[in-house]
Length: 114
Length: 109
Image (cartoon, rainbow over all chains, first blue to last red; front, top):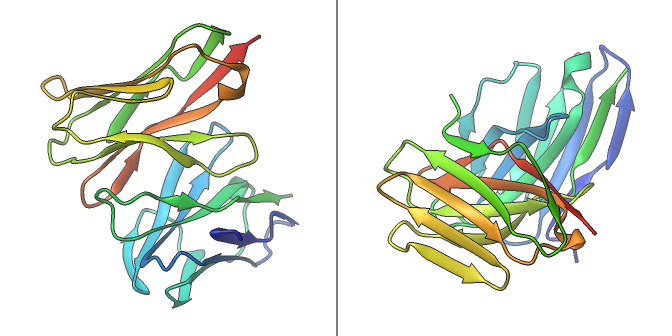
């Protein structure tokens, strides 16, 4: 039983397209995150939601829009995809905001923009 | 601005050797220092963590050493094994998580 799941695992698309990545957690956590990991393995936080409310919105292009329909789901929609968007995107969740709360990561979605 | 600085970027160790990864931070408001381990094709997972009121924490072959006055902490992997080959991230948390830049560890048989 996967704690944090993401779909799809792989996404290959053309520049200019719009795509979505879905994330679900069954841990009962209040906080969910989206991270981008580039080819150098840097983990960059993009968004953080707590109880469906946007808490952290790092400097991310407006083409990226998170949507949290409920506490268990946090989806990421990307408009007008660019070559530089190619990366692995990780969803994560934690019981609360930062502090001593462990983050549980999903398996990642490898996005390739051609 | 990188809140947590991590070094080295990559590390190659012989099987049985000691792997050491170092991290440094500036913000004294940080109150929890976890390490995450990431295998290829997987998401990061919590390995071990320490609070700033403790100078050392050991779990099996993994030890965190913490120097509060120097604002530095490090991960030591004793008797390194090929199965330890992964990317390791240090992190610091206060009201937000901050990850280091990662260290790619390769343990040679």
